Length: 618
View 1 (tube, helix red, strand yellow):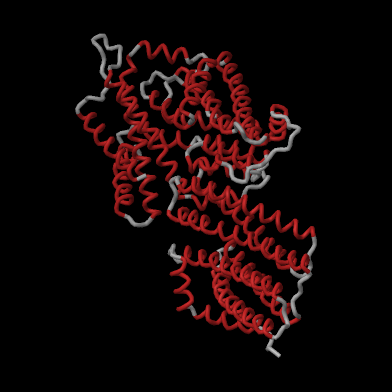
View 2 (cartoon, one colour):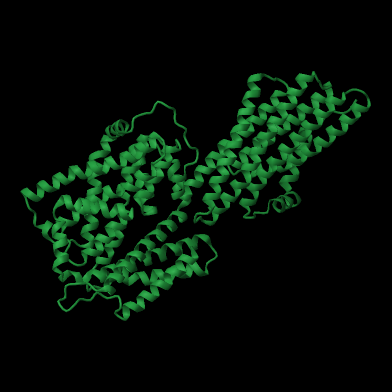
């Protein structure tokens, strides 16, 4: 990101001085009808900076608001208003209805969201995308009043850029850096907008340009033009910005602008449609709903527009559209579409089910959908949830493994092995997905969380492996008719109870980020290490006294090793929670400091030492 922004700043300075030298100004041939090569280059350069600034600002806003986006996701319900507002806010933050819709397709494909919820969010996204047009409309402010002029981007953008570069280059805070990137992205976007406007401003006197927008006053052609342009650049916000830049020529009438705006809503659907390729039926239906919503809304209001234009011929349609007027038209159109179709979500759902019917073969739902990577904060939250599912399966499997020592059954054995297979599957998909996620632009806290999850999934997978090892020990005892002495069984019960408690504590420390539970894990792990050594010593005494067989001794040794290693993995899990909280990625150093300097650790250790004390030898 730093390289991108530094490069962009250099380009801006170069273009600025070219602009001063009139190399990027619009000029005409001797008839005054054609924009020369420098005007074209200025338009292209302005468009590139505009799109780049929008991308930088949107990505930085997303990282800065990552936690809030996750909170919004957690509040998603079947309630129409909640889903709609979620779509509005998320799209306003990431500055792209296409990105929001792709994210929704990913949610549906992962089973996180049903189709009805998706429809509400998609409708909200269409309204949220109008925010960009309102920001860009500030460029059209014209007044001699000093206070009003201060609201014009050319007045305050240099100040924002200065604050942004100070935050970005000289601050050690990740939040301030992201804030700086937001301001720099906004400054770049507005500079690109000004460049485009300056480059095309001379076209106001070109007859061919006038005829072009006269042609677009045919509503059908206007809709097609808006749809094609937006489909090419895959951003309705950007295409509206381009329309606003062209509006400074004074040749874009409301009669031409409104159909183009309608078409832009259809063109933006291309991104979601492409993202649904290879997805589940419900995910494809979500993309179809997005397309249907915009086509139906456009068709209905286009008919109304044509009737009004033909019957009443309001004078405003012949007037030149201003930047502010385009922003208003864009918002009104999207709000009208939502007002028309929000009460009809059930019908849209039925239509999508008709267009994409159910297949005979059952579908496999992907736990982690790559479409979510378009919004890293949301993708990370999904990784957390899947890791929690993995953790619960691994820990349940380990508890069943301990139970198999006392109450073995074929059903229990099958359950343990299935859980171990699932943990292997989760480790594979999570590891691959988290590596891809780590390559994205992440906030500092999100980057730490990715590192934490990459560490933890191997511990949960190993707990699942140890559950199968304990099960195999139980099966060997059944096959060879091995039994332990009463004293050994009593000791094993104490160790098993201690391991079950440390499993529960490590699970709580991970899922709830519970430092109290994490500190107890560290104390109990040390007690379990001591139990293992005591039990090994006692078993040697029983062997010497002839109270235990050699075969039983081998099984006993394997069980002690597996149960003790489970506690080690629980310690790793708790240690990871402690290190992330202390902003220190050195696990062993964190644990050593915790054990040496924590009074709470020592108190817990003494309590667990008494709780899991072995019976006195006879």
